[in-house]
Length: 202
Image (cartoon, rainbow, N blue to C red; front, side, top):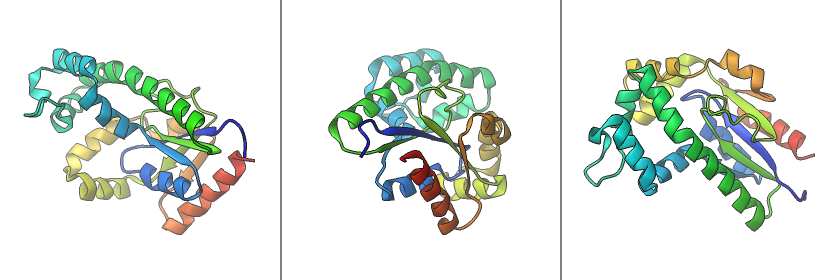
């Protein structure tokens, strides 16, 4: 057991299979932190963030209970590049701070040799130097679209808008230490994860 856990960031576009890759790491003994869950947490618990979002995008982004309605917020930001940039400027620093906090807590309170963080917008949020290694998960667009349709109930047009709003995989590859091809079977993906896990914890 190493004293300081290795920190890995898993990034990739919408529907690429980051959560599945995270589950494989969990099976191998790693502790996984999901930045999407962190965003949910901050939207519901960070009053200052909620006020900033209301100021930036108006009260229409609120649910009836006063929380942030992510669907309504997405409707605004994925139809306007300036709105997306504004959202990222508001949210990314808070998510980054929370990720660092959770990594610190895990390192102090649990005995794991690997902490994996799912960060879709890792590069856009300027977090590439926050982790020991970066893993990019890639999947063909038609598979990604099909997955997101089934999972989120979005239309193909909405999904393509999200894909277009994200940095292309070819650009992300320049920052990745490992690339996971998630087009094949679960077993094929699992073997790639086992290789990476065994490589980074040595």
